[in-house]
Image 1 (cartoon, rainbow, N blue to C red):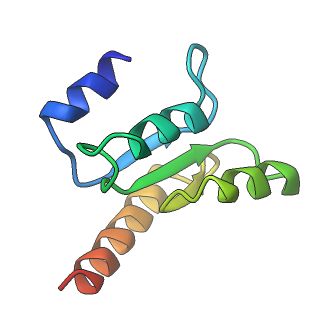
Image 2 (image 1 turned 90 degrees about the vertical axis):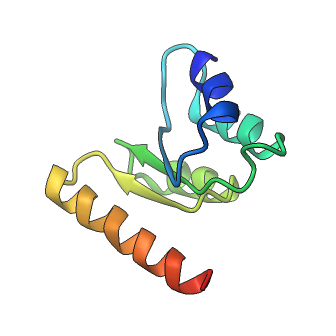
Length: 93
């Protein structure tokens, strides 16, 4: 919750959000972000360790900007984020 309130002050270019967290799950956080005028335009990419069809379908119904599997190497995650940001800049130009 502290992180969400911080987002209203410090608007990041992208949020990497864990899909499964101990206190508040990722879908709840995404709904909160989308419900706020200050944060609704920040792209959100979910990180998840689950790749089963049911989880992926549920995750995509939430309409995040994307999702990445936690099984990716740090370099692969970095490259995926770089690719997303490059496409996002081109799309918004």
